Image 1 (tube, rainbow, N blue to C red):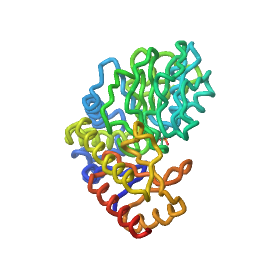
Image 2: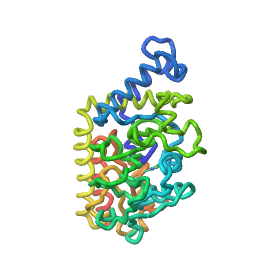
Image 3: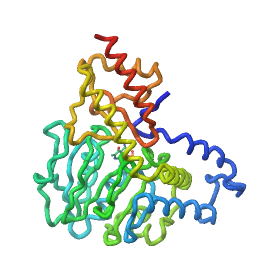
Image 4: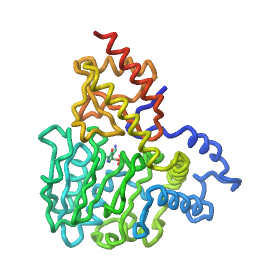
Length: 356
Ligand code: PMP
């Protein structure tokens, strides 16, 4: 069985087995990680290791803080605005699909939000060219969604901006190399490439820490959490523990560079097949195709339900496109092996042949 879920998504088997081994008794402590006080030496060791491994993996400069928070990226759509708008009270957003639209709609409750560029008129099938962005030099930050999970659109070039760049990296964090020093802040829900739901990672530059609005809840005040080592309240301890296992696993795979190569290879194989088989079509511009969420249609859309049902019978599950778009979505996160893609391509070939 191959699970192509867009999230919560599959985790590497090695990690699940390790978690199973540790479930009742973590390293001879007599406790499950779920049962440990977050102030205990045991949990501190788990959390510190996770921080250090993540820093190493993404080559994070010293002037950034890593925060292990809760709420999910959706909560942080609002929290980013509440923490960063500051005196300027205005921010730029680049609208590239479903999730950036949600992000800007949440931010609008707290300040003056300018859509500096949008691809809505082309059905969100590309990234608006940087030369066309109408940035406001007075904006507190510019927000992008590096990978639009529902639309299958991804930034392949990250622009260098005169104002802090903020990114929702929920669906492509740790799947490809990212120069974090280009960003003022990045944030990601964990349940795609990092671990279980419940953990939201926020990585923030020192200079952006202390401009939160009065009304921001203390536990979501990035500056307060940073100065308290993320311990203003109970962190999502079990999710942090699994995330830590994921960071070690990624280091063992050869780091982000190696995993990026593997991910590109998987996506290329699938796009190449789709582009060469008229039974399927991908409407996303080749310059902006996501390497982690491959979205496509059957040329005869009326066959989509049957395709999904036949795929599921053969063990290819969770391929249904996001509700706003329909069609098919194949999520190829870090834990999906190339064998899964090969098997899916073989199925798609047989299916198309059987229908013509
Ligand atoms: N941003 C992106 C890019 C997403 O893919 C998702 C979830 N699919 C979210 C934000 C929302 O995350 P959550 O449901 O964890 O709040």
